[in-house]
Image (tube, rainbow, N blue to C red; front, side):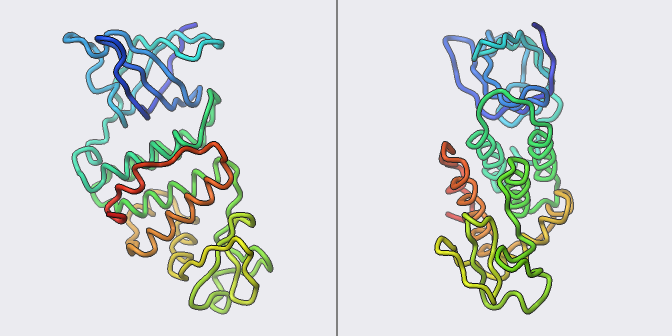
Length: 255
């Protein structure tokens, strides 16, 4: 059947002399693989609509039992020039795409996941965006949308509120198995990762604010590294088939 949906291009590869195979994340169907015949020809009608990170409206012939669908039309909605024209933001944009691609498999509609990616790209595209804050916020939202149960607001043992000054001291301890941090009064779990109080505070703030507000938050390099490491660790511990996110090691924070 012929279907139309909005989509964000996650990956692109050459196929044959003039075609492309794309991985899309679509609003109505989730992650999909498509072939686009003639996409690389001299007279291609697609333009930038098939570029990685482009947000486009696409038309395709879809068969439920076919792994590779045939895309016949694509109209560009947004190319996120504020990301792709700025080297300091570009790798963060790739990280957004790669984390979704690494954790989600199969065709299944997930409106929340699509919205998380779209809103995060829009936030990163804004002139005043701070890329580390956008990526941390995105990872928190991705974890919540996947139902992986992370709590950055309370102690996972005694449920003390981290808003109370006495619950945290010089550092905290994050447990993947328990899905959160222990307070200063509770013994850490055996799998705990030592984390600064600053990082806990940043994650708590991001967890309660929309991405357009979070995008302007100044985050220290230390908090950004710690936050990204523990959120990636949490994802990988709960998604056994999760692939390595190569772009994370190429961010300016880790160079």
